[in-house]
Length: 111
Image (cartoon, rainbow, N blue to C red; front, side, top):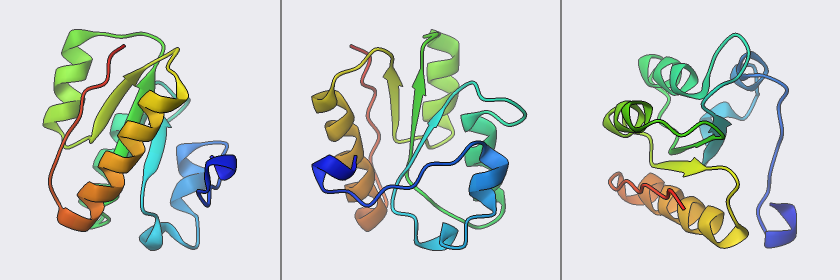
């Protein structure tokens, strides 16, 4: 991400991310659907319930149409299936950044 010109931070868990001192200035969140303790959808819902709106991209190695429908209905910007290429990820990030500025939009990249 840094090589593409983005300022990026990494976290070992959703709980660690929630303690991030710049949480409210985060422009885009990329999380896995399945993570220990708190998955990506649960993290997104926790943020929304806390009044923190971060455009979110969820990635998964285990695509499931019912999960895809749930995450997009919940307001996730993009659902990206592993393995994915750099271009697909960039499309999702740009969509998330545009959404953060405009407040609308969703993508489903499932290549």
